[in-house]
Image (cartoon, rainbow, N blue to C red; front, side, top):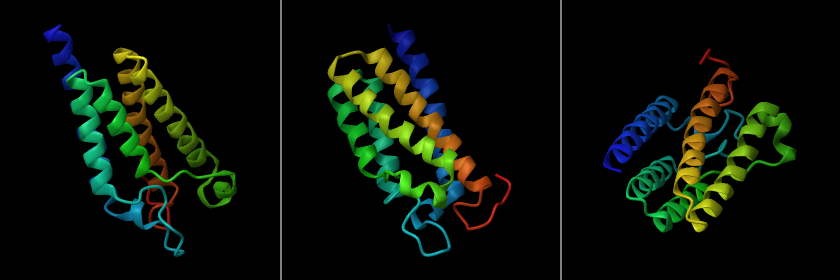
Length: 151
């Protein structure tokens, strides 16, 4: 059991570190939105989002499904939900990531309530990977700075 937790901790910490690097690389651009004066692209408070992500990670490592569900709900409060009306501004692929993200957040919360630790954690890892992929896509498509910068 300890070995499984150790492997889990290493994998999740690597994912969290990578997400943190992507967030730091983006600076506040994701919170500020485009240069057109539009509202924030997806995140309203990057620092609170990072704290909620770390809290979720720790809850999963402690096998605290109540804490994990609470932290994942907190993550969602800092991630704005785009709608079909945002397709032109964001592009279809970013909108698809956003919609999938919110579906998976709901799935993680349900799996936590069902006490399915492994499946909930697997979906949480997917969330982290989708954040990285979406940040990279937003950078390369110029959605963070108003112009493409090649990733």
